[in-house]
Length: 322
Image (cartoon, rainbow, N blue to C red; front, side, top):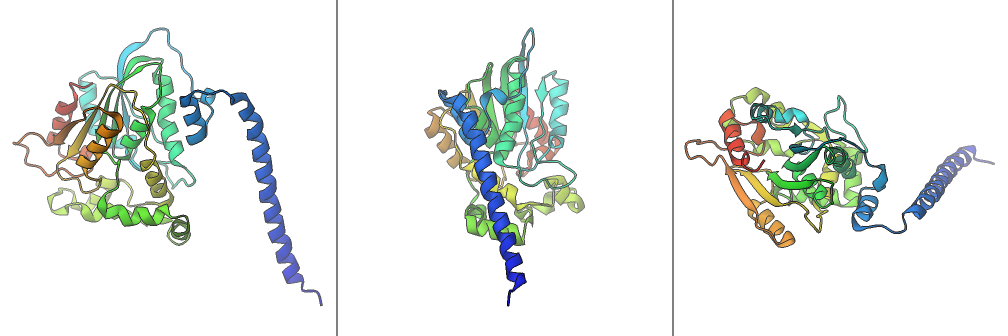
């Protein structure tokens, strides 16, 4: 007796496998044909194609008849939006400093955006630099947290303008010891797929490290400090992938690290400093917030939502750089 249930199941499975094979073959044929046009490539172009999956001549373009002097590019952190820079913007505007704050692809939407990768984050900023490079002679870059990883990555390329100062604020170049277990789990293909299946949207683990006693907005702490109470697990996977992709060269002029005096989120600053110095054979300038002894504050990871005196101190630290 024919069991139609098993036949139907077999047809479905066979159809899915066939569709995937056709998808693979069509995709391969498409890009094999395109890649024939990129036989002889320089190093930068190879990085674009092999790591960011974009062809160099497909980047955004710009033109201006006369370049201006300089601009400050602000790169937000993990799942942050341009909203985080509001307090700092007041200082920049009052000092007549040109600045640009791009939104990073996948962040700040009214619903969670899935299947966005670290390459998309980097390209969000590179698209902006590809425009700014023809408008300004010099770009100063200020990154925050994971934004520092993006800033460092894009500084390996030869742009049509000079990258002067790279300012890494609370950099996330190495994992915090408390996050080692999370990174280990999400770096495993099997374990990460299980987490994505059963717990695709997770609670931020960093909230427990915030000293709530010293915060004046206890009831709104989670939203004031982190913007999102929960976030998609896939984005943490991409964050740690980006953390492990370290550019072999740095084309900027100098690097400054600005650290908070009570940051419990990022990895050890001294280790990050040593890592950068050994990688690029340059001296790294480290500044601590708050630096003024009269400012007896404990400043955590989210520097830019701190007391206005901390923001003022921060600006005093960087104004001579930009």
